[in-house]
Image 1 (cartoon, rainbow, N blue to C red):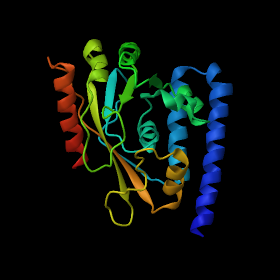
Image 2 (tube, helix red, strand yellow):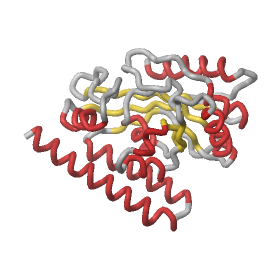
Image 3 (tube, rainbow, N blue to C red):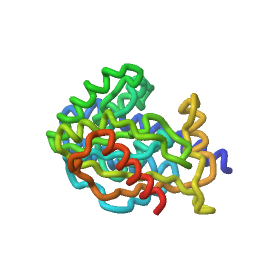
Image 4 (cartoon, one colour):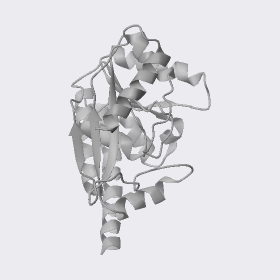
Length: 245
């Protein structure tokens, strides 16, 4: 029965993604940005429900920008969870743009892409982030730069924090946790580490032990004279504190 239920969820997930792609392709060109944002958030919430992942939002998500969200990173689910809590523009690795179905969905959701292997590309992305913040948008980044195992935060890279420094925008720390619904302990099912591909990770999420997603929004911070490196270190401490609540 578990395998049948998982297969049914997988089919519904594929259909939901196709519907999202059709919406972005056929309807988004005719809609204004607020309607697009609301549609992306509703789509993300619906996909979490299809996957059987309850969403718990703690704290106060920003109502509007300019604000830069910084969060810990464990899984491809992180983007979906934050989108479901509050629509924003993500900064993601350029590989995502070319993923089947997911790439067009991410692009339609307003994702900014960065080529992490090219250090100079960070300057280009920071410029676009600053423009988005100036346009009163909500932008989100994962300063660890890669997914972790959920036990300890990796160091926060400071490059993308420069966008908030330059724009004079606040930064809001965000903590993500995935919790086993039976034990209340941290769940390893959604972790996406190393060279694992999306397909086995998705199947583990669908067929594994049930877990819930928790996203906790902290208090927005201003730079208050801090440079990007000092601010990045302080933001890491803030995210770590939120993870421990």
